[in-house]
Image 1 (cartoon, rainbow, N blue to C red):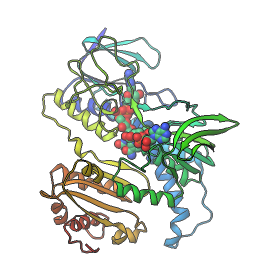
Image 2: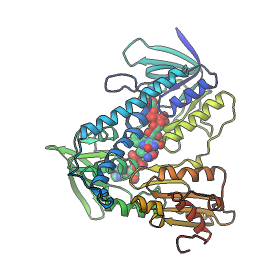
Image 3: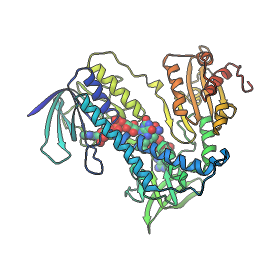
Image 4: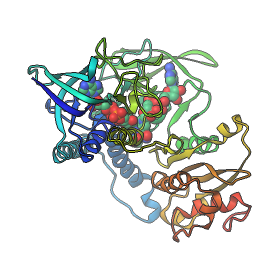
Length: 475
Ligand code: FAD
Ligand code: NAD
């Protein structure tokens, strides 16, 4: 028997489960199919984000930050303790319990919103028919829908001659589950995952070396923020080798031997563990039946237009499996917009105001364009900045590293980008996203009253500085 739905969503990550819930809220009969299984083989909706991405990495970042601060920062506050210790299995177990709580919460939310959930692998066929192979090996289930939303996410990119073995050479999944602190950890790729998970194990005592192919550090971020971050991370002991191309890696006698090529020629590094974090690619394996009509781009992503419509009628695609940044909040907002469009409502995503955050310490957050992007586009702009070293709250808290930088159009003063490196930058950036979403100007940020003493006063001062009238620094 074929069960019929208004909307079937394939994938239960932050794109998929959110769109299924929104569709149900709008009165549509919705189903969500997800194939991820936890260690006990049970359904664990939430996708990469909840199971092996955003949430577990933040849990470990928080645990390792406490340990690091205890050792390196508390003494300045007059707090002393006996020698600090770290029990890695307890830390990992705490992380697992946070994941379990949240994935269990998603199951409850799906149920509460009357979204039918199927634990298994789905394949889209022609005419929006969907075949589900249940994870428990049961008989295939057949579904049919007026609309299908593909939200199948992404998987790590593998590089030639560096094969994952899940123990010595790992991806994010392995690096979130080490049972002890490796003495030495190599990381291929000094991008977001490399810096976040590299920071975790560095804070816990591993000697971490990041091998990055590009000549610039954090090339995606604003260049001033990248420079600032490089200085801070060096102080913390992260050893970043730029312009270093990895050629191969092999495991020998319990060590990983990595061969690289840099300006000096070929050389080798030896590590206890190697994390490969060179980017992710759309995951569409076994998703698209032969005649389903959905095309892929030459990068292997599902082809969509600006409204997330694929090349097949009433089949939509969102999140990591399509163009745009691979971020959980981008996936969720696309999912909500698509559900609303299906329900006949107007919906729109403003890709220019998707915030980015790197959860290092200090955190790095930005929204909009970088200075180098504006220069390349020949834009006329003004900049203002403010160091946290001159912010009372940052000094009081003992975290004065970092700065705010604002870029605004020279003529109209519209904010074009805001870049922050500081403790809590992930929260501070929201004000700037709101300002940009409302096409605000730097003058708006300069006029808004910011509570004292707060870190957000640095944004206020950077906006004042842009106009040559900062109070707490020279102009
Ligand atoms: P996913 O979360 O990947 O979910 C897709 C789901 O679909 C998976 O459960 C998969 O098993 C399932 N699926 C795939 N194919 C099928 C099929 N045929 N049938 C049934 N089910 C299927 N982003 C942030 O914004 N902030 C962060 O802090 C952050 N940290 C991250 C840390 C790490 C280590 C990693 C790896 C990623 C991180 N990300 C972060 C990125 C974020 O996880 C992704 O952008 C987000 O999960 C994408 O959501 P999605 O719904 O598109 O896909
Ligand atoms: P990334 O694109 O952030 O970084 C990959 C890095 O690897 C780049 O700097 C690249 O130049 C380098 N690289 C590529 N090939 C290489 C090679 N052969 N040798 C050496 N260096 C090489 O990718 P990632 O860190 O794997 O993360 C994937 C995606 O997951 C991110 O783009 C992001 O969208 C998402 N993510 C987001 C967060 C967050 O929002 N805080 C956290 C983790 C992951």
